[in-house]
Amino acid sequence: TIMDQLFETKQVELQLAKYLGIEKCLIAKGDSSQQTKVVSSFGEMVNESLATRLPDGKNVIAVMGGTTMAAVAEEIGQLETEKRHNIFVPARGGIGETVSVQANSVSAVMAIRSQGEYRSLFVPEQLSSFAYETLLQEPSIKEVLTLINQANCVIHGIGRALHMAARRKMSESEILMLKQHNAVAESFGYFFNEKGEIIHKIPRIGLQLKDIQNIPYVFAIAGGKDKAKAIHAYMKNAPKQTWLITDEAAANEILKGV
Ligand code: G3H
Image (cartoon, helix red, strand yellow):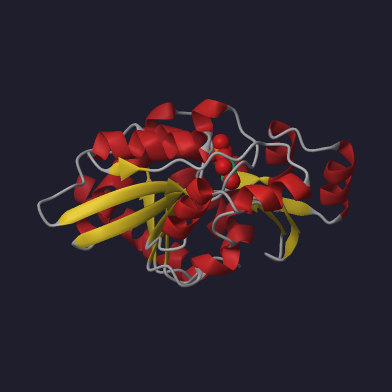
């Protein structure tokens, strides 16, 4: 029956959260790498979680990019209330994606759909370290960075390392280095091996992985059987307060052999 299925899903959610050492898992039916409607379910779950969890007052929500995050953004609904105001910002700038899935775009879509505000961070993709340092002194950039550092909520995707490196057109030598260090996961512009150790970091402004540790509301959104290894690896490094929104395909693969 449906009740039995719901109960079973709840049990797997508890088991997975415990296994990964994080606060909570929410599991959508199916495999998001095969069915787009599963990604829409992620979006509904994120929307519901934000609606119920975000406190009154001003919230600063830092978001990352990626195809999952872009699809999640499309499911966001009204989150403003008389007492609650949300400002969406990109968590980090310029880590190399096409415009439609960049953090700036995801942040704007979420803000518009939820009737909140947003601020963009304009950092060119290819920048010398000199230009980078100069840019950091720009008042308009400083203002957004200050806001990002006040984030009390972070929403991000998790990717497979080599897939992300290729999609973001990283150099051959960087890709070779990732292979030599057995990179399996990527999130926030950080690359991780199977043990969850950071083996490479794209130097970009905005939130760093250590900053996430102190942020009260953290949501990681990733599913699909092929992402199981990446999710598992990243979670070894994830802050304990993380909520993982995933699907049955990834959950079953991670829990195989437990
Ligand atoms: O950092 C992780 C990636 O943004 C995930 O991208 O959702 O397109 O797989 P994706």
